[in-house]
Image (cartoon, rainbow over all chains, first blue to last red; front, side, top):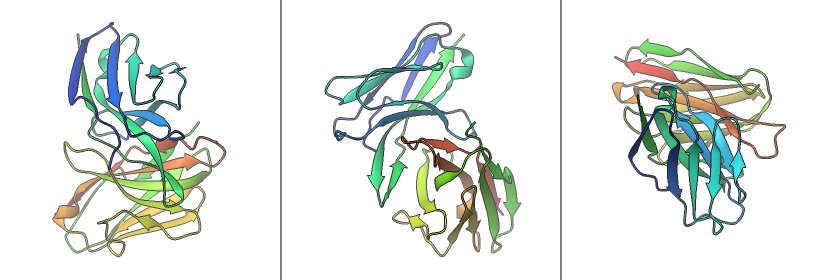
Length: 112
Length: 117
């Protein structure tokens, strides 16, 4: 089972920041948090990942709380093309492999 | 870099026939490849994990005799849906972990839409 919970849907205005929350209260000390997004009928696209420090790349920023029980993905200036389902995933070590177990995700709608 | 391709992108087959889907890592060697299935309006469900040269590990509830996985090289994995039925119609997505990266992030293919008539 997925170790994360996310709101079912969110919306934001184009050009504004989109802040997507994620709870992962049972995360273990060495488990990474990954964010992917999926635009309709395409494969998921990697966005960012982190362990305990905040991370930033050209797509987004990831803010992880000090106790690591939750995180927030920030899209600083959302565009219409950012409309997608966003998945927050705790990567698990299972059966000798790292695995991504997808939860339900957050459907983000960016409004013009 | 880190491009994963799938072929075909969509396929229609008749009930009872078998269908093979290919997954290739185009510009990197993959330590591990994964197969997912996604039904309409649902999330991705992990079906199996495969490492090059070894047998795939299937998730609970996934029939290994129905979904045959072959991982013959570090850049190619195939999923064969045997004796397909309409309930196997779904979006099949593969992903690959890079061999040369410590953090093992997965890169996903574009998916294959299978329709069984």
